Image 1 (cartoon, helix red, strand yellow):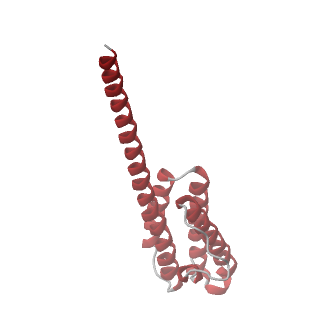
Image 2 (cartoon, helix red, strand yellow; image 1 turned 180 degrees about the vertical axis):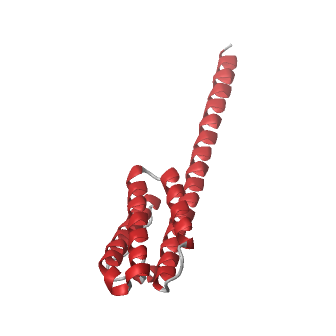
Length: 149
């Protein structure tokens, strides 16, 4: 009788442990998938900011503004409120700075461009913290961080 009870308890324990391990593996896979989606969205936002700046600098149209809004919307869906609001703020600053750049030129837009660039660098820091990427010292800025929005 004791051996039957041990067998039943052992089987039940095995089922429960198996379920817990599978659940943990599914949670880890889900978090990794979300992190991959965030990385793609974060990179798309930063690419859109750079492309929009390039278009505005050359006096071009606003086709990159749509990509910027799309990337911001994806970030709002995938990220917490702090990152989402920072992304919305940056998108607004970029749009305003680039509109001023197209209409009035580089010198007139300088302050707005610098403010947007500062917000972009702040947002990059938030992206890195969200993805668990260790921050680099300020003296060793990444190559992308030297470009204007």
